[in-house]
Length: 556
Image 1 (cartoon, helix red, strand yellow):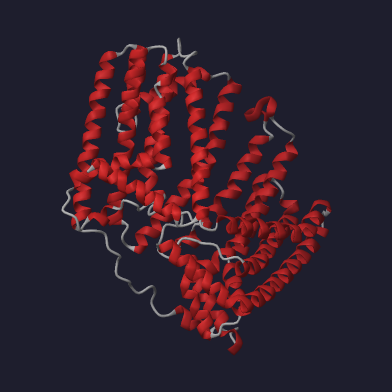
Image 2 (cartoon, rainbow, N blue to C red):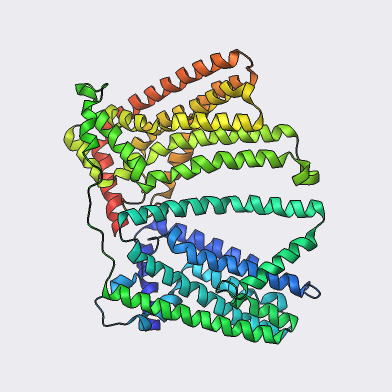
Protein backbone atom coordinates (compact mmCIF):
# COMPACT_ATOMS: atom_id res chain seq x y z
CA UNK A 1 0.00 0.00 0.00
CA UNK A 2 2.84 2.40 0.81
CA UNK A 3 4.47 1.83 -2.58
CA UNK A 4 1.12 2.26 -4.34
CA UNK A 5 0.42 5.59 -2.63
CA UNK A 6 3.93 6.87 -3.31
CA UNK A 7 3.59 5.91 -6.96
CA UNK A 8 0.18 7.59 -7.12
CA UNK A 9 1.57 10.77 -5.57
CA UNK A 10 4.47 10.78 -8.03
CA UNK A 11 2.29 10.32 -11.12
CA UNK A 12 -0.28 12.91 -9.98
CA UNK A 13 2.49 15.44 -9.38
CA UNK A 14 3.96 14.82 -12.85
CA UNK A 15 0.52 15.09 -14.47
CA UNK A 16 -0.13 18.35 -12.65
CA UNK A 17 3.17 19.80 -13.88
CA UNK A 18 2.47 18.78 -17.49
CA UNK A 19 -0.69 20.87 -17.55
CA UNK A 20 1.18 24.17 -17.65
CA UNK A 21 4.73 24.92 -18.84
CA UNK A 22 4.83 27.92 -16.50
CA UNK A 23 4.00 25.69 -13.54
CA UNK A 24 6.79 23.32 -14.55
CA UNK A 25 9.27 26.18 -14.79
CA UNK A 26 8.37 27.52 -11.35
CA UNK A 27 8.50 24.02 -9.88
CA UNK A 28 12.00 23.56 -11.31
CA UNK A 29 13.03 26.93 -9.88
CA UNK A 30 11.66 25.88 -6.50
CA UNK A 31 13.51 22.57 -6.76
CA UNK A 32 16.81 24.31 -7.58
CA UNK A 33 16.25 26.67 -4.65
CA UNK A 34 15.50 23.73 -2.36
CA UNK A 35 18.64 21.86 -3.46
CA UNK A 36 20.71 24.99 -2.88
CA UNK A 37 19.21 25.45 0.59
CA UNK A 38 19.81 21.80 1.48
CA UNK A 39 23.42 22.03 0.27
CA UNK A 40 23.90 25.16 2.39
CA UNK A 41 22.44 23.47 5.47
CA UNK A 42 24.59 20.37 4.99
CA UNK A 43 27.72 22.46 4.48
CA UNK A 44 27.02 24.60 7.55
CA UNK A 45 26.30 21.65 9.83
CA UNK A 46 29.34 19.77 8.54
CA UNK A 47 31.54 22.80 9.20
CA UNK A 48 30.09 22.99 12.70
CA UNK A 49 31.46 19.52 13.44
CA UNK A 50 34.96 21.02 13.74
CA UNK A 51 33.84 23.29 16.56
CA UNK A 52 31.42 21.12 18.51
CA UNK A 53 33.98 20.00 21.10
CA UNK A 54 33.49 21.94 24.29
CA UNK A 55 30.08 23.24 23.18
CA UNK A 56 27.96 20.11 23.59
CA UNK A 57 25.32 21.87 25.70
CA UNK A 58 24.87 24.78 23.28
CA UNK A 59 24.65 22.58 20.17
CA UNK A 60 22.11 20.27 21.81
CA UNK A 61 19.95 23.16 23.03
CA UNK A 62 19.97 24.86 19.62
CA UNK A 63 19.09 21.57 17.89
CA UNK A 64 16.08 20.99 20.15
CA UNK A 65 14.85 24.59 19.90
CA UNK A 66 15.15 24.86 16.11
CA UNK A 67 13.74 21.35 15.62
CA UNK A 68 10.76 22.17 17.83
CA UNK A 69 10.10 25.28 15.74
CA UNK A 70 10.19 23.18 12.55
CA UNK A 71 7.73 20.67 14.01
CA UNK A 72 5.42 23.46 15.21
CA UNK A 73 5.44 25.03 11.74
CA UNK A 74 4.39 21.71 10.21
CA UNK A 75 1.55 21.32 12.72
CA UNK A 76 0.35 24.86 11.90
CA UNK A 77 0.80 24.30 8.16
CA UNK A 78 -2.76 22.98 7.53
CA UNK A 79 -4.24 26.06 9.21
CA UNK A 80 -2.08 28.50 7.25
CA UNK A 81 -2.22 26.79 3.85
CA UNK A 82 -5.43 24.82 4.15
CA UNK A 83 -6.38 23.40 0.76
CA UNK A 84 -2.98 24.13 -0.81
CA UNK A 85 -2.25 20.51 -1.75
CA UNK A 86 -5.08 18.04 -2.05
CA UNK A 87 -3.27 15.52 -4.28
CA UNK A 88 -3.88 12.70 -1.79
CA UNK A 89 -6.94 14.06 -0.03
CA UNK A 90 -8.23 11.23 2.23
CA UNK A 91 -11.83 11.84 1.14
CA UNK A 92 -10.86 10.70 -2.37
CA UNK A 93 -10.32 7.17 -1.03
CA UNK A 94 -13.78 6.88 0.52
CA UNK A 95 -15.01 4.57 -2.27
CA UNK A 96 -12.24 2.02 -1.72
CA UNK A 97 -12.31 -0.77 0.92
CA UNK A 98 -9.44 0.72 2.91
CA UNK A 99 -8.91 1.52 6.57
CA UNK A 100 -7.12 4.43 8.11
CA UNK A 101 -4.36 2.17 9.39
CA UNK A 102 -3.64 1.01 5.81
CA UNK A 103 -3.51 4.54 4.42
CA UNK A 104 -1.61 6.26 7.25
CA UNK A 105 1.96 5.07 6.46
CA UNK A 106 1.73 5.86 2.76
CA UNK A 107 0.16 9.27 3.23
CA UNK A 108 2.79 10.20 5.81
CA UNK A 109 5.71 9.09 3.63
CA UNK A 110 4.22 10.85 0.61
CA UNK A 111 5.68 14.05 2.05
CA UNK A 112 9.06 12.91 0.70
CA UNK A 113 7.80 13.62 -2.83
CA UNK A 114 7.10 17.28 -2.07
CA UNK A 115 9.69 20.03 -1.86
CA UNK A 116 8.82 21.11 1.74
CA UNK A 117 8.81 17.51 2.99
CA UNK A 118 12.11 16.71 1.25
CA UNK A 119 13.79 19.81 2.70
CA UNK A 120 12.54 18.92 6.18
CA UNK A 121 13.80 15.36 5.81
CA UNK A 122 17.28 16.53 4.80
CA UNK A 123 17.41 19.08 7.63
CA UNK A 124 16.24 16.47 10.17
CA UNK A 125 18.82 13.90 9.08
CA UNK A 126 21.54 16.54 8.76
CA UNK A 127 21.02 17.61 12.37
CA UNK A 128 23.45 14.78 13.24
CA UNK A 129 26.28 16.23 11.11
CA UNK A 130 27.80 18.39 13.88
CA UNK A 131 28.78 15.08 15.51
CA UNK A 132 30.46 13.77 12.37
CA UNK A 133 33.68 12.85 14.21
CA UNK A 134 31.81 10.64 16.68
CA UNK A 135 30.28 7.73 14.69
CA UNK A 136 28.01 6.41 17.45
CA UNK A 137 26.52 9.84 18.12
CA UNK A 138 26.15 10.36 14.37
CA UNK A 139 24.12 7.15 14.00
CA UNK A 140 21.88 8.08 16.94
CA UNK A 141 21.43 11.55 15.44
CA UNK A 142 20.32 10.07 12.11
CA UNK A 143 17.81 7.84 13.92
CA UNK A 144 16.54 10.84 15.91
CA UNK A 145 16.27 12.89 12.71
CA UNK A 146 14.21 10.15 11.04
CA UNK A 147 11.90 9.98 14.07
CA UNK A 148 11.60 13.77 14.05
CA UNK A 149 10.67 13.86 10.36
CA UNK A 150 8.06 11.11 10.78
CA UNK A 151 6.62 13.00 13.75
CA UNK A 152 6.26 16.20 11.72
CA UNK A 153 4.51 14.39 8.88
CA UNK A 154 2.15 12.38 11.07
CA UNK A 155 1.06 15.31 13.22
CA UNK A 156 0.76 17.56 10.17
CA UNK A 157 -1.40 15.03 8.32
CA UNK A 158 -3.47 14.46 11.45
CA UNK A 159 -4.14 18.17 11.82
CA UNK A 160 -4.88 18.51 8.10
CA UNK A 161 -7.36 15.63 8.03
CA UNK A 162 -9.05 16.78 11.25
CA UNK A 163 -9.39 20.32 9.92
CA UNK A 164 -10.92 19.03 6.69
CA UNK A 165 -14.07 18.18 8.63
CA UNK A 166 -14.12 21.17 10.95
CA UNK A 167 -13.37 23.59 8.09
CA UNK A 168 -16.01 22.21 5.77
CA UNK A 169 -18.18 25.27 6.38
CA UNK A 170 -17.42 28.48 4.51
CA UNK A 171 -17.23 30.55 7.68
CA UNK A 172 -14.67 28.24 9.29
CA UNK A 173 -12.47 28.26 6.18
CA UNK A 174 -12.64 32.03 6.01
CA UNK A 175 -11.58 32.39 9.63
CA UNK A 176 -8.78 29.84 9.19
CA UNK A 177 -7.50 31.68 6.14
CA UNK A 178 -7.50 35.01 7.95
CA UNK A 179 -5.65 33.53 10.93
CA UNK A 180 -3.17 32.00 8.52
CA UNK A 181 -2.43 35.36 6.93
CA UNK A 182 -1.81 36.91 10.35
CA UNK A 183 0.59 34.08 11.22
CA UNK A 184 2.49 34.50 7.96
CA UNK A 185 2.83 38.26 8.49
CA UNK A 186 4.00 37.78 12.08
CA UNK A 187 6.53 35.17 10.96
CA UNK A 188 7.84 37.60 8.35
CA UNK A 189 8.60 40.02 11.20
CA UNK A 190 10.35 37.37 13.28
CA UNK A 191 13.75 37.76 11.58
CA UNK A 192 13.90 41.42 12.56
CA UNK A 193 12.84 40.60 16.13
CA UNK A 194 15.48 37.87 16.42
CA UNK A 195 18.12 40.25 15.09
CA UNK A 196 17.21 42.85 17.69
CA UNK A 197 17.34 40.28 20.49
CA UNK A 198 20.74 39.04 19.34
CA UNK A 199 22.08 42.59 19.14
CA UNK A 200 20.78 43.43 22.59
CA UNK A 201 22.60 40.43 24.06
CA UNK A 202 25.74 41.18 22.04
CA UNK A 203 25.91 44.80 23.10
CA UNK A 204 25.22 43.88 26.70
CA UNK A 205 27.81 41.09 26.66
CA UNK A 206 25.29 38.73 28.28
CA UNK A 207 25.49 35.70 26.01
CA UNK A 208 25.73 33.36 28.99
CA UNK A 209 22.30 34.48 30.16
CA UNK A 210 20.89 33.93 26.67
CA UNK A 211 22.37 30.43 26.51
CA UNK A 212 21.00 29.66 29.97
CA UNK A 213 17.51 30.68 28.87
CA UNK A 214 17.88 28.64 25.67
CA UNK A 215 19.00 25.58 27.60
CA UNK A 216 16.04 25.82 30.01
CA UNK A 217 13.66 26.16 27.07
CA UNK A 218 15.24 23.17 25.34
CA UNK A 219 14.91 21.05 28.48
CA UNK A 220 11.16 21.68 28.54
CA UNK A 221 10.69 21.16 24.80
CA UNK A 222 12.66 17.91 24.85
CA UNK A 223 9.81 16.18 26.70
CA UNK A 224 7.08 17.43 24.35
CA UNK A 225 6.11 16.03 20.93
CA UNK A 226 7.83 19.05 19.38
CA UNK A 227 11.36 18.43 20.65
CA UNK A 228 11.67 14.87 21.97
CA UNK A 229 13.18 13.28 18.81
CA UNK A 230 15.53 16.23 18.30
CA UNK A 231 17.00 15.75 21.79
CA UNK A 232 18.46 12.30 21.11
CA UNK A 233 21.63 13.48 19.39
CA UNK A 234 22.40 16.02 22.14
CA UNK A 235 21.96 13.42 24.85
CA UNK A 236 24.32 11.02 23.07
CA UNK A 237 26.86 13.78 22.45
CA UNK A 238 26.94 14.69 26.14
CA UNK A 239 27.01 11.04 27.23
CA UNK A 240 23.70 11.30 29.10
CA UNK A 241 22.49 7.79 28.30
CA UNK A 242 19.61 7.72 30.80
CA UNK A 243 18.25 10.94 29.33
CA UNK A 244 18.72 9.40 25.89
CA UNK A 245 16.66 6.34 26.85
CA UNK A 246 13.94 8.54 28.32
CA UNK A 247 13.74 10.81 25.29
CA UNK A 248 13.79 7.81 22.93
CA UNK A 249 10.91 6.19 24.80
CA UNK A 250 8.91 9.44 24.82
CA UNK A 251 9.62 9.95 21.10
CA UNK A 252 8.33 6.49 20.24
CA UNK A 253 5.23 7.05 22.37
CA UNK A 254 4.50 10.34 20.64
CA UNK A 255 5.10 8.73 17.24
CA UNK A 256 2.74 5.84 18.04
CA UNK A 257 0.16 8.29 19.37
CA UNK A 258 0.42 10.35 16.20
CA UNK A 259 -0.04 7.24 14.05
CA UNK A 260 -3.02 6.13 16.14
CA UNK A 261 -4.72 9.54 15.93
CA UNK A 262 -3.96 9.82 12.21
CA UNK A 263 -5.52 6.41 11.56
CA UNK A 264 -8.61 7.33 13.60
CA UNK A 265 -9.02 10.63 11.77
CA UNK A 266 -8.64 8.81 8.43
CA UNK A 267 -11.27 6.25 9.43
CA UNK A 268 -13.69 9.08 10.11
CA UNK A 269 -12.78 10.88 6.89
CA UNK A 270 -13.25 7.71 4.84
CA UNK A 271 -16.65 6.99 6.38
CA UNK A 272 -17.98 10.56 6.41
CA UNK A 273 -16.03 12.69 3.92
CA UNK A 274 -16.31 16.42 4.46
CA UNK A 275 -19.03 17.98 2.41
CA UNK A 276 -19.72 21.53 1.51
CA UNK A 277 -21.99 23.18 3.99
CA UNK A 278 -25.38 24.15 2.74
CA UNK A 279 -25.67 27.72 1.64
CA UNK A 280 -27.32 30.00 4.11
CA UNK A 281 -28.75 33.47 4.05
CA UNK A 282 -25.89 35.97 4.05
CA UNK A 283 -27.71 38.86 5.69
CA UNK A 284 -31.15 40.01 6.63
CA UNK A 285 -32.56 41.76 3.59
CA UNK A 286 -30.75 42.36 0.34
CA UNK A 287 -28.27 45.20 0.82
CA UNK A 288 -27.47 45.22 -2.90
CA UNK A 289 -31.10 45.77 -3.84
CA UNK A 290 -31.47 48.48 -1.19
CA UNK A 291 -28.48 50.31 -2.66
CA UNK A 292 -30.75 51.64 -5.41
CA UNK A 293 -32.48 53.81 -2.77
CA UNK A 294 -29.31 55.58 -1.60
CA UNK A 295 -29.65 59.36 -1.68
CA UNK A 296 -26.99 59.94 -4.36
CA UNK A 297 -28.25 57.26 -6.74
CA UNK A 298 -29.62 58.31 -10.12
CA UNK A 299 -30.75 56.00 -12.95
CA UNK A 300 -27.26 55.93 -14.50
CA UNK A 301 -25.61 55.15 -11.16
CA UNK A 302 -27.87 52.31 -10.00
CA UNK A 303 -25.29 49.71 -11.19
CA UNK A 304 -22.59 51.72 -9.41
CA UNK A 305 -24.52 51.55 -6.14
CA UNK A 306 -25.12 47.82 -6.53
CA UNK A 307 -21.41 47.19 -7.14
CA UNK A 308 -20.50 49.36 -4.14
CA UNK A 309 -22.84 47.38 -1.88
CA UNK A 310 -21.55 44.06 -3.17
CA UNK A 311 -17.87 45.01 -2.80
CA UNK A 312 -18.48 46.34 0.72
CA UNK A 313 -19.97 42.96 1.53
CA UNK A 314 -16.79 41.36 0.15
CA UNK A 315 -14.68 43.57 2.41
CA UNK A 316 -16.71 42.34 5.40
CA UNK A 317 -16.96 38.64 4.57
CA UNK A 318 -14.55 37.47 1.85
CA UNK A 319 -11.18 36.31 3.28
CA UNK A 320 -9.45 37.15 0.01
CA UNK A 321 -10.25 40.79 0.75
CA UNK A 322 -9.87 40.57 4.54
CA UNK A 323 -6.29 39.30 4.17
CA UNK A 324 -5.31 42.85 3.18
CA UNK A 325 -6.40 44.20 6.59
CA UNK A 326 -3.62 42.59 8.71
CA UNK A 327 -1.05 43.89 6.23
CA UNK A 328 -2.45 47.41 6.49
CA UNK A 329 -2.30 47.22 10.29
CA UNK A 330 1.06 45.51 10.82
CA UNK A 331 3.16 47.13 8.08
CA UNK A 332 3.11 50.67 9.56
CA UNK A 333 3.76 49.22 13.03
CA UNK A 334 6.81 47.36 11.71
CA UNK A 335 8.34 50.48 10.18
CA UNK A 336 7.69 52.51 13.34
CA UNK A 337 9.49 49.87 15.42
CA UNK A 338 12.33 49.76 12.90
CA UNK A 339 12.68 53.54 13.05
CA UNK A 340 13.06 53.34 16.83
CA UNK A 341 15.85 50.75 16.60
CA UNK A 342 17.86 51.42 13.42
CA UNK A 343 19.15 54.78 14.64
CA UNK A 344 19.38 53.74 18.29
CA UNK A 345 22.94 52.90 19.44
CA UNK A 346 21.46 51.00 22.38
CA UNK A 347 20.20 48.33 19.96
CA UNK A 348 22.47 48.62 16.94
CA UNK A 349 25.75 49.50 18.68
CA UNK A 350 28.41 50.66 16.24
CA UNK A 351 26.12 49.80 13.30
CA UNK A 352 23.57 52.44 14.33
CA UNK A 353 22.90 54.89 11.52
CA UNK A 354 22.05 58.58 11.72
CA UNK A 355 18.75 59.55 13.33
CA UNK A 356 17.21 60.72 10.04
CA UNK A 357 17.19 57.14 8.73
CA UNK A 358 14.43 56.30 11.19
CA UNK A 359 12.34 59.22 9.92
CA UNK A 360 12.72 58.15 6.32
CA UNK A 361 11.84 54.56 7.24
CA UNK A 362 8.50 55.63 8.73
CA UNK A 363 7.73 57.90 5.77
CA UNK A 364 8.58 55.06 3.38
CA UNK A 365 6.46 52.58 5.37
CA UNK A 366 3.41 54.85 5.41
CA UNK A 367 3.76 55.55 1.69
CA UNK A 368 4.16 51.85 0.90
CA UNK A 369 1.04 51.09 2.94
CA UNK A 370 -0.90 53.65 0.87
CA UNK A 371 0.37 52.11 -2.37
CA UNK A 372 -0.50 48.57 -1.26
CA UNK A 373 -3.97 49.68 -0.16
CA UNK A 374 -4.63 51.17 -3.60
CA UNK A 375 -3.15 48.16 -5.38
CA UNK A 376 -5.64 45.84 -3.64
CA UNK A 377 -8.19 46.84 -6.31
CA UNK A 378 -6.15 45.04 -8.99
CA UNK A 379 -7.58 41.62 -8.02
CA UNK A 380 -11.24 42.71 -7.85
CA UNK A 381 -12.25 41.54 -11.32
CA UNK A 382 -10.35 38.25 -11.01
CA UNK A 383 -11.98 37.60 -7.62
CA UNK A 384 -15.43 37.68 -9.23
CA UNK A 385 -14.35 34.67 -11.30
CA UNK A 386 -16.90 33.48 -13.88
CA UNK A 387 -19.73 35.29 -12.07
CA UNK A 388 -18.48 38.42 -13.83
CA UNK A 389 -20.56 37.35 -16.87
CA UNK A 390 -23.52 39.01 -15.11
CA UNK A 391 -21.90 42.39 -15.82
CA UNK A 392 -21.86 41.66 -19.54
CA UNK A 393 -25.38 40.22 -19.52
CA UNK A 394 -26.78 43.19 -17.57
CA UNK A 395 -25.03 45.73 -19.80
CA UNK A 396 -23.00 47.32 -16.99
CA UNK A 397 -20.73 49.99 -18.45
CA UNK A 398 -17.03 49.89 -17.76
CA UNK A 399 -16.96 53.21 -15.89
CA UNK A 400 -19.81 52.01 -13.68
CA UNK A 401 -17.86 48.88 -12.75
CA UNK A 402 -14.64 50.81 -12.10
CA UNK A 403 -16.34 53.58 -10.13
CA UNK A 404 -18.32 51.18 -7.93
CA UNK A 405 -15.23 49.21 -6.97
CA UNK A 406 -13.21 52.37 -6.32
CA UNK A 407 -15.90 53.88 -4.07
CA UNK A 408 -16.11 50.63 -2.08
CA UNK A 409 -12.34 50.76 -1.50
CA UNK A 410 -12.42 54.36 -0.25
CA UNK A 411 -13.09 53.15 3.30
CA UNK A 412 -9.31 52.75 3.54
CA UNK A 413 -8.72 56.51 3.10
CA UNK A 414 -9.83 57.50 6.64
CA UNK A 415 -7.99 54.49 8.06
CA UNK A 416 -4.75 55.62 6.37
CA UNK A 417 -5.27 59.10 7.81
CA UNK A 418 -5.72 57.65 11.30
CA UNK A 419 -2.56 55.51 11.23
CA UNK A 420 -0.63 58.51 9.86
CA UNK A 421 -1.81 60.61 12.80
CA UNK A 422 -0.86 57.84 15.26
CA UNK A 423 2.61 57.47 13.70
CA UNK A 424 3.15 61.25 13.80
CA UNK A 425 2.14 61.45 17.47
CA UNK A 426 4.35 58.48 18.45
CA UNK A 427 7.39 59.92 16.65
CA UNK A 428 6.76 63.56 17.55
CA UNK A 429 6.01 64.77 14.01
CA UNK A 430 2.74 66.53 14.72
CA UNK A 431 4.01 69.66 13.00
CA UNK A 432 4.42 67.79 9.68
CA UNK A 433 1.09 65.98 9.94
CA UNK A 434 -0.67 67.70 6.95
CA UNK A 435 2.27 66.92 4.65
CA UNK A 436 2.36 63.28 5.80
CA UNK A 437 -1.37 62.82 5.26
CA UNK A 438 -1.08 64.46 1.83
CA UNK A 439 1.63 62.01 0.72
CA UNK A 440 -0.11 58.91 2.04
CA UNK A 441 -3.53 59.81 0.66
CA UNK A 442 -2.27 60.85 -2.78
CA UNK A 443 -0.33 57.59 -3.08
CA UNK A 444 -3.47 55.65 -2.15
CA UNK A 445 -5.78 57.53 -4.52
CA UNK A 446 -3.36 57.41 -7.44
CA UNK A 447 -2.71 53.70 -6.90
CA UNK A 448 -6.47 53.15 -6.84
CA UNK A 449 -6.82 54.92 -10.19
CA UNK A 450 -3.91 53.04 -11.78
CA UNK A 451 -5.25 49.71 -10.46
CA UNK A 452 -8.60 50.52 -12.09
CA UNK A 453 -6.78 50.40 -15.41
CA UNK A 454 -4.49 47.45 -14.74
CA UNK A 455 -7.25 45.25 -13.34
CA UNK A 456 -9.05 45.58 -16.68
CA UNK A 457 -5.88 45.00 -18.71
CA UNK A 458 -4.33 42.09 -16.78
CA UNK A 459 -6.43 39.30 -15.28
CA UNK A 460 -4.25 36.98 -13.21
CA UNK A 461 -5.41 33.87 -11.31
CA UNK A 462 -6.46 34.31 -7.69
CA UNK A 463 -7.92 31.77 -5.22
CA UNK A 464 -11.43 30.76 -6.17
CA UNK A 465 -14.36 31.81 -3.97
CA UNK A 466 -14.35 29.68 -0.82
CA UNK A 467 -10.68 28.65 -1.10
CA UNK A 468 -7.88 29.52 1.28
CA UNK A 469 -6.62 33.05 0.48
CA UNK A 470 -3.05 31.72 0.74
CA UNK A 471 -3.48 29.12 -1.97
CA UNK A 472 -0.81 30.01 -4.53
CA UNK A 473 -1.37 30.15 -8.26
CA UNK A 474 1.58 29.78 -10.61
CA UNK A 475 -0.21 29.66 -13.94
CA UNK A 476 0.26 33.36 -14.69
CA UNK A 477 2.82 34.47 -12.14
CA UNK A 478 4.43 36.75 -14.72
CA UNK A 479 1.14 38.55 -15.31
CA UNK A 480 0.65 39.09 -11.59
CA UNK A 481 4.17 40.47 -11.17
CA UNK A 482 3.68 42.77 -14.17
CA UNK A 483 0.41 44.04 -12.72
CA UNK A 484 1.89 44.60 -9.26
CA UNK A 485 5.17 46.25 -10.20
CA UNK A 486 3.74 48.13 -13.16
CA UNK A 487 0.81 49.64 -11.31
CA UNK A 488 2.83 50.51 -8.19
CA UNK A 489 5.67 52.01 -10.23
CA UNK A 490 3.33 54.18 -12.31
CA UNK A 491 1.38 55.22 -9.20
CA UNK A 492 4.59 56.15 -7.39
CA UNK A 493 5.81 58.26 -10.33
CA UNK A 494 2.42 59.97 -10.68
CA UNK A 495 2.40 60.89 -6.97
CA UNK A 496 6.05 61.96 -6.96
CA UNK A 497 5.40 65.72 -7.41
CA UNK A 498 3.36 65.86 -4.20
CA UNK A 499 5.92 63.77 -2.28
CA UNK A 500 8.81 65.99 -3.42
CA UNK A 501 6.84 69.11 -2.48
CA UNK A 502 6.25 67.62 0.99
CA UNK A 503 10.01 67.38 1.58
CA UNK A 504 10.52 71.14 1.18
CA UNK A 505 7.23 72.51 2.51
CA UNK A 506 6.73 73.73 6.06
CA UNK A 507 4.26 75.61 8.24
CA UNK A 508 1.06 76.80 6.56
CA UNK A 509 2.32 75.56 3.20
CA UNK A 510 1.70 72.02 4.46
CA UNK A 511 -2.04 72.73 4.60
CA UNK A 512 -1.98 74.01 1.04
CA UNK A 513 -0.08 70.86 0.10
CA UNK A 514 -2.80 68.73 1.71
CA UNK A 515 -5.49 70.47 -0.34
CA UNK A 516 -3.53 70.26 -3.60
CA UNK A 517 -2.61 66.65 -2.89
CA UNK A 518 -6.22 65.59 -2.41
CA UNK A 519 -7.25 67.38 -5.62
CA UNK A 520 -4.34 65.76 -7.46
CA UNK A 521 -5.17 62.29 -6.16
CA UNK A 522 -8.92 62.55 -6.80
CA UNK A 523 -8.26 63.89 -10.30
CA UNK A 524 -5.97 60.98 -11.19
CA UNK A 525 -8.46 58.54 -9.62
CA UNK A 526 -11.25 59.90 -11.83
CA UNK A 527 -8.96 59.69 -14.87
CA UNK A 528 -8.06 56.09 -13.97
CA UNK A 529 -11.73 55.15 -13.58
CA UNK A 530 -12.55 56.70 -16.98
CA UNK A 531 -9.63 55.05 -18.79
CA UNK A 532 -10.19 51.73 -17.02
CA UNK A 533 -13.86 51.88 -17.98
CA UNK A 534 -12.99 52.34 -21.66
CA UNK A 535 -10.54 49.46 -21.49
CA UNK A 536 -13.17 47.24 -19.88
CA UNK A 537 -15.78 48.16 -22.49
CA UNK A 538 -13.37 47.21 -25.24
CA UNK A 539 -12.14 44.00 -23.59
CA UNK A 540 -15.36 42.69 -22.03
CA UNK A 541 -15.56 39.38 -23.94
CA UNK A 542 -11.79 38.86 -23.65
CA UNK A 543 -11.97 39.43 -19.88
CA UNK A 544 -14.74 36.86 -19.53
CA UNK A 545 -12.80 34.36 -21.66
CA UNK A 546 -9.73 34.79 -19.43
CA UNK A 547 -11.82 34.36 -16.28
CA UNK A 548 -13.38 31.16 -17.65
CA UNK A 549 -9.96 29.84 -18.66
CA UNK A 550 -8.50 30.55 -15.22
CA UNK A 551 -11.50 29.00 -13.50
CA UNK A 552 -11.26 25.80 -15.55
CA UNK A 553 -7.51 25.50 -14.98
CA UNK A 554 -7.74 26.09 -11.23
CA UNK A 555 -10.56 23.63 -10.75
CA UNK A 556 -8.86 20.92 -12.79
